Length: 210
Length: 210
DNA sequence: GTCTATAAAGTGATAGAC
DNA sequence: GTCTATCACTTTATAGAC
Image (cartoon, protein in one colour):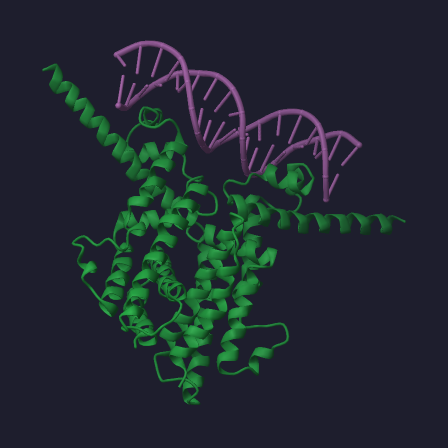
């Protein structure tokens, strides 16, 4: 009997912690971290603000926890598709698969919120900048340039500086994703913007193919 | 005599107002609007916080004034070069001139601060989003696509959807500019990033030229 | 226009009962 | 773990003397 109650309490507490993180992410990504009060979070969760301090040391620790999630989110893992199909893809198909993974980020609520949090806090929060730079920009550009280099070796694409090509492929994907999140915020149609993901691959591929 | 004093007072007051805007921009762009207190601003200006209220109704009005400056800044006017040389430029030279204007934004302190303010407030401030969307993104992409369309008519470049080309030209410029501002923040070398502005034009031109 | 003083509200965080 | 109550501090903004 007492075990049963303990499990219930444990389960409830666990749920609250997860809920705090979910509501905080929603609030931070739409209002910004500084503009969100611990009372805002508590109200969204449905508890009193003091209850938050049973799960996190302070407001900053909530942000820190969310920021670390950036690393494991789709934003930082555009090369890891669910079924690892991309390993077998070649040339243009591979680029298209990357572009699509990127595009889908905007249509997953959590990933989109993490992206908006990233943009809003990138100038204020050193850790956000670190994760963006290391795990998002550099890792992906390096991975991309080695893939492009391979394609050059196999004469699939023309010889060129792979790092420049990687940047040229990456930059529009990032920009279009930001555009989509902005369009969504103002409830504008995103279809034209979404189609640019595929058109970018077409345009890019035409320029690099042998 | 009394006129002399009045002019002095007027001049001093005018300088204070300009100074408030300058210091606010510096603080907002580095700490964010919400994280900057009116005391922070007053301390930077060298007056007491209550003095600010002789020049602006409240803290929001300071931000609003700065936000309106976005419209007249280089960020929203990349097609208007000082000597209007760009009107006479054709083809690749024209694109290179736009790319260079873009690049120079990052190296002007005020324009860079306005750019950082834009990024940080774009999700929170509707007016910022409006100015970005209308005066920065749309205006420039439309202008670009009509220039590209002209080049197609004159058989300087291959036939293609000019709006897609405009987006493909614009997106990396924006992304590289953001990268440079981030690199600068962490005092990293920006030379590799800066060179991408020219390399982008090369890569882009190779893909569209007849 | 700037200053000192102060009001009025908001904010993060803690103590202790249940 | 959550609640009520409360503290200590910060923040925006105003009033009135100079």
